[in-house]
Image (cartoon, rainbow, N blue to C red; front, side, top):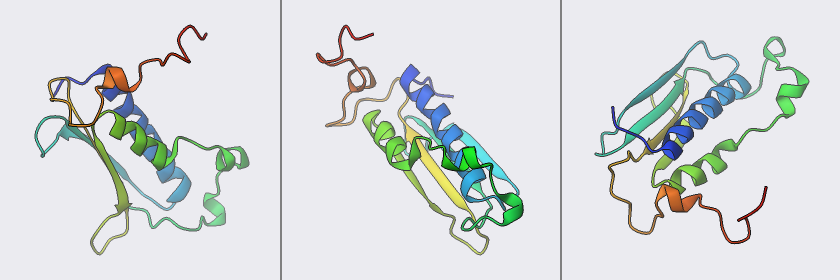
Length: 137
């Protein structure tokens, strides 16, 4: 398996955690969720995907989450997409194509040996402290 930067490894963990939380929150009828981590087909890097078989939508009363869990917000897909893009990767999410219902989240993250993409800062620069945050606790 490819060597990941510390930032890309942390992002992969956050992606899986957020995706599994979303399955629980938005597809309570799902009977399975498949998590895959493998070398990306596009070349350098890894692919992280989480696919469920739930229909999503309204939650039946028997599957309702506790009130405190329903109101708790995670990073959300827009924030994850921004984070993955800053690392030089891509993130997509949407319904599974085919006769069975489901949802798939897929991220491709560069490995440590991947050349930086043009116009995308290196992971170290993407999250380096700015002059306004240096020295902050």
